[in-house]
Image 1 (cartoon, rainbow, N blue to C red):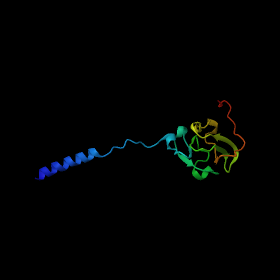
Image 2 (image 1 turned 90 degrees about the vertical axis):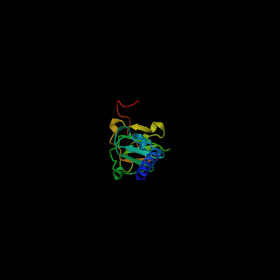
Image 3 (image 1 turned 180 degrees about the horizontal axis):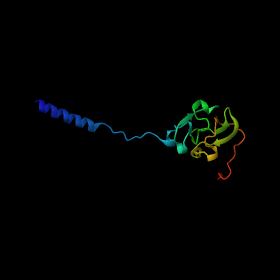
Image 4 (image 1 turned 135 degrees about the vertical axis):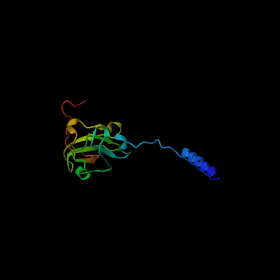
Length: 135
């Protein structure tokens, strides 16, 4: 009787294990970590490294550990984003549009460069396009 019970227990355990759902979902990586409705900055190229996600004006990126550290971004908001070279919306600005064009690596000159983020402007003097890096 004990052998029959053990055999039955093994069979039930095997069926139960086979019936468990297997998750094939994988954790988001790179740019895909940025949720819809946020502006995200990454410390690495191509959406790698540390990430911050913003939904509003941020006068000093040092408070979030991203001052002069961002190398790429993705604007998943409906806003135009103004990136300021200095804290508290001072210095010069670069613009990141919303939509599919709002994702990518910063020009090498502007990697590890920005210190504040402003949603929908008014922006300030342009940082310009670095020589040899224009389209």
